Image 1: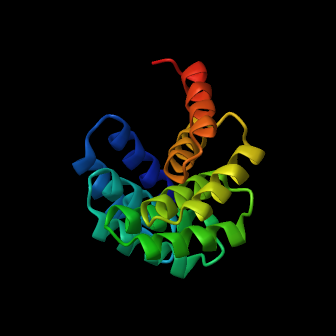
Image 2 (image 1 turned 30 degrees about the vertical axis):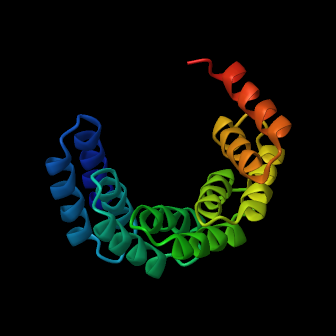
Length: 171
């Protein structure tokens, strides 16, 4: 359909580092299909990349209104909330994403980080451990767990996680 074609054009503009063109293109797609979520999601991602957390949050709210069972939208809104300083709201969104898609490791890592930042070390460790059960090679989960273990006083566990991160990505 026409709105999807316009969005593809916007993504090409975003890929070529022309966010103004991409933004105008996404807005055109939204005008063509205001009841579709793809234009709002694309604009929300772009706004997030540009540091417009309030704008991204508004777009993700609209996506969730249109598609309340889209787990990835809750995860994305959680990122907008976290980047805007609303960690409890971010944790709630990551939890909603996980209710809809229980094996979503991205939401688990994000919730683990938000829990760590709110000093819920036990919750952060649970999220990082679950992530590593589902995806053992995720270095972001290893790094997060290493930090949580360090704060919890488990120096040997922290060192083991950091060593695994360095072996996986020495640079």
